[in-house]
Length: 81
Image (cartoon, rainbow, N blue to C red; front, top):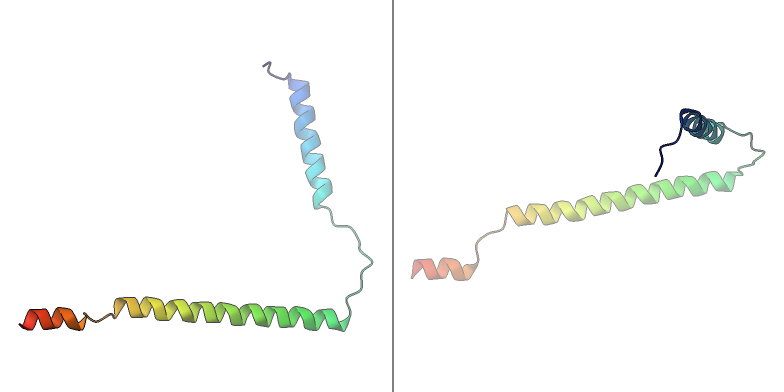
């Protein structure tokens, strides 16, 4: 493999920078969002929030139950005999 010369390296880096700048430039969009779209977004956000709360609640009870686990009845019976 041969190493690219300085002009080729400069061209590749400069073309990469120009490409990135062109991709990051905003374009004007002639778009319309009707009221139904807004309510759909709000309901999606509420649903996401509700599912996150449910998942956290479920795992919280599992973690809490793991650390507050009492010894089995069989173990206490064996120790008392």
